[in-house]
Image 1 (cartoon, rainbow, N blue to C red):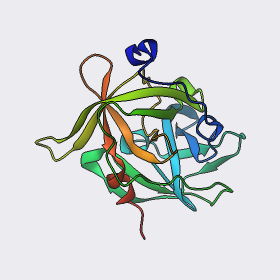
Image 2: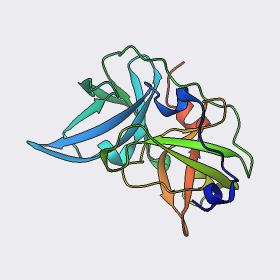
Image 3: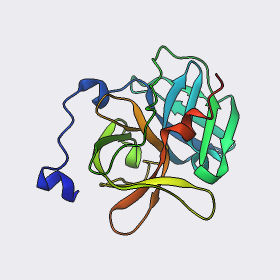
Amino acid sequence: CAGCRSGLVQPVRDARLVENPAVVTIVGWSGATEGGGGTGFVVAPGRVVTARHVVATRPAVFLRWGNGRQVAARAVLAEDAPHDLVLLEVDPIESAALAMSDEVPAVGSALTAIGSPNARAQTVTPVVVTGAEKASLEGQHLFRVRGALASGSSGSPVLDAQGRVAGGGAPAALAGASFGIVPARFVAALVPR
């Protein structure tokens, strides 16, 4: 990304962000064929958030952890259609949940997306916030980031410097290499307290 080359975005040095056991690869199956996928992240024991469109048309959805363990999603517990988010129920795995940030990151903040583009698990992509949160006419709230997010990043957590979820869901493609990210408070709203 342009911010990476210019030095605006610093490389990730925190190993907790690079190989995070709370981030999973989502694999959809239709019959005997593996279909499209994305990324998800643990928000509570047995609860994983991902992008709604990643699982919406798949009769079977599996979550693959970095250690190779794979489990089937049991059920969809909650949805936020305007923000393309879904909360899945899975068998609890030994994995700490990611903490949520209480604030939308400021313009210029360096963030880290962890995803599974092209089925490459635990891919780390530096992004920089380039636009404040705005609401669309459809009721979708997004803040803008710039970075090289690829197919399979849908459902990725976008983490702040403290490793907290600043946003997530499906990066909405905007002009150029800009993407809209759903703020963490909408992700947190899916999880029962």
